[in-house]
Length: 226
Image (cartoon, rainbow, N blue to C red; front, side, top):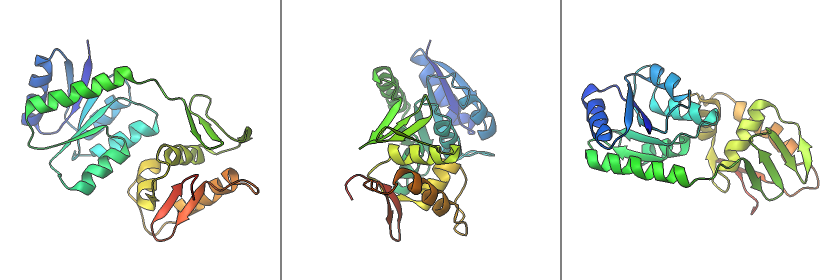
């Protein structure tokens, strides 16, 4: 039976979700706070997660970020009263697969869940990321450029993985900090610039076309077209 985890602190909303999904034949488990939800989500024991954006102790954005950082690919339907476009974009970029705004119709929520489950069934696990001659192997945890192995530290590996998954997109320091480190961005720190500098020296060694570029005033981009 398909197992779904609902992370929702509002009991009325949670029971609405549980009733609707149970009626579709799904087994639904409920976590009523972010800390419990995070522990359950990181177990990887569910086929799909419905995730409230605003939660006590640990919010939904931190949960989905932690999941993706640990390479847990469980589909996540984010549900929130925050309807602002930037909020939706932030949730999706952090690793959410779909975003539903409260109040919502129960049958639409169930339909979105079914779409995400069908999509998961069709997916072939991607274990190697490639951009031009740069290759990152998620299983072997190795990185190479022109078949030459690169010696990356764990955080450099995570940073490069995120940039490769979002290649050709401008990534702000806030996006990098929150998605890779999992913390809210502190504008007073230069940790992003330090790690980007180290990563660039390893990936874009002399004689190779540069892939990591600085976008002045905005952030960074991994692109083969600049």
